Length: 379
Ligand SMILES: *Cc1c(COP(=O)(O)O)cnc(C)c1O
Image 1 (cartoon, rainbow, N blue to C red):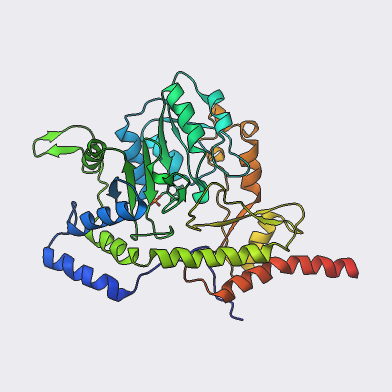
Image 2 (tube, rainbow, N blue to C red):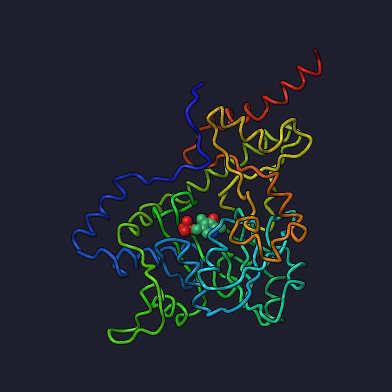
């Protein structure tokens, strides 16, 4: 068996012959960016594929999220999860909002709606939940609280490309949702992102914000940024969209193979995938508990020695980072579930080009410490 490096993910590259004709189109049109023809085509194709009405493409998911928050003109405090990628809370700081951390649900690893109300103050203006690992949040409970307390809801849906629950696409929920189309995500445009909104007026506003705030040649309303997706990035998205169902299907096979193999490894449990009718298999998080002979960090190191590069998404918790640790809500006593999960979780490699042999190699590496303890016990 080879000992090649297996990364936690590997970007999906569509066949070059799908990409090159689109590059030729760019050369023929002379349009490089600023909402060119490929950009328009990708916006329409993605809105249709995802089952949403209004989608605005961005140059990356972070600027998409920063712009979504800016579009709602939020002030003051925003309730969010500590169990996410750092872009989530950084986007609040860029908008001069104060993050208020609320603990997560032990099953979904998402913001626990039963703990939101206690964190609302007269400065609270919004809730920023994350569909962590593509697990849909309890969106009904969040909507009920937000409606009753007059708060906006922005979903960081960076992990939720294509995810559906009983109500259809999770991307239609909340005031706004944002996607990341980064190379490490399920669907990528090298770098990219999107904001999903509910009305044509909001999309127009967002389009202005991602173009410096320019309304027309002589009118600039607010200090927007530059969040535009270029034609070459849109070409990557168009070339990839034909293959996305096959990519997700292959991820599903890897997910199923892991679940079967892990069923008889004590102390390693896949995190459940609740509340979804269509999954994107973006991540394969497992929880490493006391029944396993190694700690989470020990198995992470042991796998690394075997060239198997797992990730501890999301450790450390955002609330422990120097920018956030002084916030009152960052106190670990306020976040017991997130603190425990962040110390147990390990994301195993999952990507469309993964071979069955890669899965076997990873499973054997996860079994090896058990065999060593059995031998030790027998001696
Ligand atoms: C990837 C990610 C982002 C940032 O997206 P980029 O496209 O990399 O800027 C934001 N939030 C979450 C939860 C992510 O995983």
